[in-house]
Image: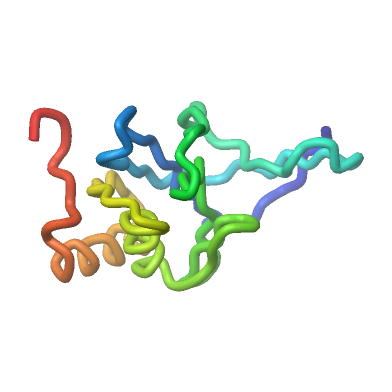
Length: 132
């Protein structure tokens, strides 16, 4: 496994899912480096402070990525999705028949502003957090 340096300001959005798939909790994380398997046996992954949430399994056909990479004003989920950050929230909430509410726990202004705009436009898709 090789560690590849990242660009300053490189962010990912990590996603935690409810066991029943009814909500997603999202955080922005500064990428410290990329872990790259030179043999291609495993997929490249971001190294962040702390740990990524567990991978959500068994949700086909609903796609439930562990993380997405913010690049400029776009977000990329390798091999699954790419587009504007705000459109990612709609996709995450509704793809392939999903009906998940989202909560954004963002510190960086780029995902925070995108989520706040999206939440104002889609108030029924917003999760207020535990106990709601």
